[in-house]
Image 1 (cartoon, rainbow, N blue to C red):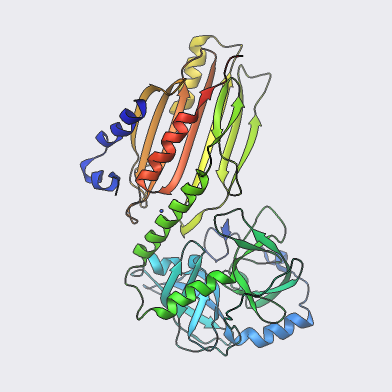
Image 2: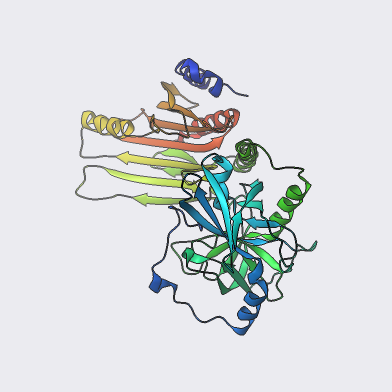
Length: 452
């Protein structure tokens, strides 16, 4: 069968040093790092807080912290975020992306807290939840008990006011008001929509009700909208705190823990994406596979320009969320792209040259990536159930997270002289078995429209 020879062929192209790795065996963040979008000072002019906000801030300020990640050598500041103390304990909740550097590179970075009175001290990382973007750290002082962790979740109603606290843009501690607007299901894990201002540096800060109950944790915002912000729901905080308080001592290697969480995520992602057969859409004379779901969206585009000797129609689908691992690595996502090209002005030779050049320009990653191995690729001409095509399969292994891979599949049809379908699948952060599973289904699902 074509698929067995193609998938077997890739192993013969892998350098011996990478064989063990490839043998079968998981939005914008609001800290102060480079991927966060900062606002100008004139964009930070907000209405004066209400009397309710003033009372809440006054009551909560002693348990509100700024968290700073510093280089061990010289203590230069790398990133900043926010956090809050849990009850009267010495535990602090924040986002994973705020402390990811000390989780993954503890020999290079150290964490420090600064409270609203300017007192500071070091932090010890206790627990991380990369999938929900949460972390728990321990410090040398205890809280006043304002941010309690009740057994029952607060009942939130759409439109009710919430109050977000943190240290935006390293300018000082603030409180902002906004409305709760429901649960968002666009990712694989629920988030709460907060229609209020949250800015870079407020990551990990608390968002509370008028009664001071914790509703969620500041995590991200949309850059293409106004006051569209997101919170990690409180129930995930409860779950991580239970794990943190049950630990006798902090784990020695957080990379292993993050890797296990990423492996768990990829299983959930692939199972949900393949719970039903891929949908097929017509593109020219071809049938192309797509996936439209709560997590994945598709868009269409046409470049029909009379001045060009050919036209291109495209369908693109992608998962809108990703799992943040570090500033340089986000994973746990899938994308599909189909491009149908046809011409009535070019001859067969020139059209074949156009199609070949388009295929050749595709990029599968470089050889200097510190997170991923160079791509190991296999190419073959094959025929699935009904369609001859040229296909390339590429695999890259994660250097720091054993058992995780990025897969890419690129195909181009070879059945017509003046029309061509080029399709590409990319799936990031999956097991070897799941990468092969999705790739096979994708290849088998490309076809031609049946003749009447």
